[in-house]
Image 1 (cartoon, rainbow, N blue to C red):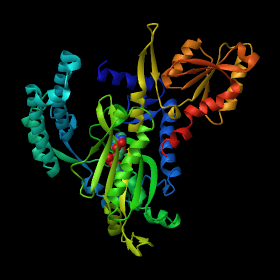
Image 2 (image 1 turned 60 degrees about the vertical axis):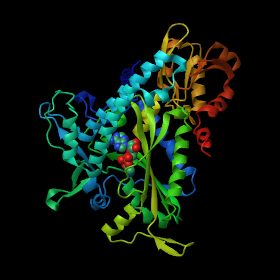
Image 3 (image 1 turned 60 degrees about the horizontal axis):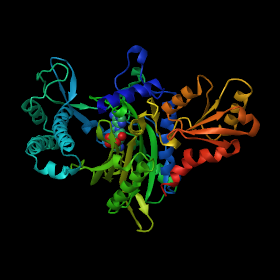
Image 4 (image 1 turned 90 degrees about the horizontal axis):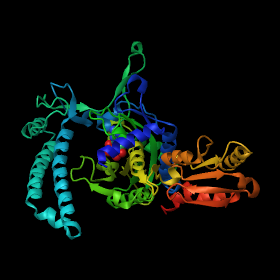
Length: 513
Ligand code: GAP
């Protein structure tokens, strides 16, 4: 199946099974805003629990906060967002559609990559097992021609972005004949800078309203609370502050479902260290975060680091953890060494001293910061998309199954009476009552047992527990495993231990130590 078709199916599945709905759907939706449904919210909460526990429970020196979305507007001046949180935008005069100039060019670069991949795939098919991909990529004239064109475009693009040369970006679009996907024309406006922050007014106009912003990242709430947490928590460097919360960006190009949203959620942790030790900590956090991702068992080959060559002016190292989505490797998490930029600037703009007295060194300094920043929604998408399978069964049927990591699954077990009579529903409810305090379990009695299994497969429920007439005689049930579809007969008393082994968050967290 083409990746594009697969992605469409995944989006449709997310809606059909109560994971993600377009926002305000009965009013035809609101672009790049989504709601999480009854299963989506469980999966999302489990992702957040996994991150929060990994950060705060497993690290003695990391604590959490929950800061407000609205903050003093000068914070966004100090952070650089008012002046520099911009995207270069361009309009097509015929379609009246607005685009990010950099994305139009990146898409053009991606077309060369696709051409190269197609050549390679064709050759791989032709030569079979004897195919040497590396050699082919290095020597095939058509591949080299595409690569040369790609590299030339990439170099021009990188230079224009580095200098934020807006005219240069426009010229690339014109030179490469990039057309508007809607109108098909090259009737482009100038390229302009567009600030991504949403703003609103606080206070009534009579009192003199103040322009405030919806935070575009949660990180600044951590920086401005650095002293509060350090002093009240008696924290000693190195230490971290973690936060999960909503962030808002007026993205010009919002697409790929929940990958790029206007309202989204971040899980960010700022780790404060001694100046000079930041690169060592940067390397440690890269490793720690990758381990967190890989522990989910989605496949190690689906992750890669993308180290930034072009660094923001305040950073001295930065990398992305990319995940193989149906539309290619994409950033899920950023890890940045942000030096003392943020704390230093808040000291400057607020006029308050923001320093740490290091008792071991017997001196005060502005701590340096390593940031780990991951989007909850992107993490959700990476897990959801890579768990989706249309499995061909031996009997010729197809089943749609979500192989979600079991501790993150919305429902851990469905308990099903074989028939709706003879006391089987009561027995099923007894089992629910035994398990519900530890796990989200669901009672399911409608339709044939086969249909019920399929329904639970489609939402990723790891276990189906069936109560039949034998249960009434010997207190045993059948337990069916989602991934293997294997069934075994077990005593009801054994159920907590069976579930615990596979679905408990504790077991997942133990993999991190
Ligand atoms: N404090 C640093 C920061 O915000 P970022 O790279 O802009 O860095 C961090 O964002 C993460 O937030 C990204 O890796 C991504 O997972 C998520 N993210 C950013 N913009 C997003 C958007 N428009 N929609 C969904 N997730 C987004």
